[in-house]
Image 1 (tube, rainbow, N blue to C red):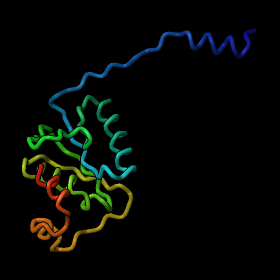
Image 2 (image 1 turned 180 degrees about the vertical axis):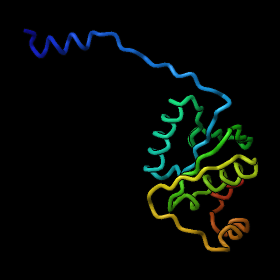
Image 3 (image 1 turned 90 degrees about the vertical axis):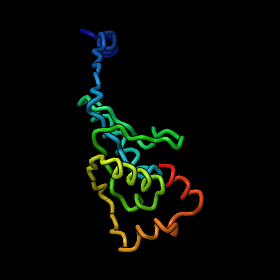
Length: 142
């Protein structure tokens, strides 16, 4: 009869089966969320892994190029709606660029309270009244 250690060693020496996923470039998704939110970042990474398992290519907010020539060549976008999404100049800029590029956007509720912006909120963004100077530069970089 084998000891527990011998049994464990026998199992550990078995070859590991790897699964290789081939991604389809026709199926690409951009995940938009508030990068300052730990829960959104974590959920986005998990969703990215799930999309990859289904052969979708994913792009996360952290993967955005830092230059001003940011193009969204994706089939669809997923936006995580949360209480801080519209307070992020980067998220608002990305969502605006996605909408302007006619990229379909699917919204996902994050489970936290989402506030409906006041009627004049987006007008205030356009007038430069919501974000500070540095955030405005980020907003307009998209």
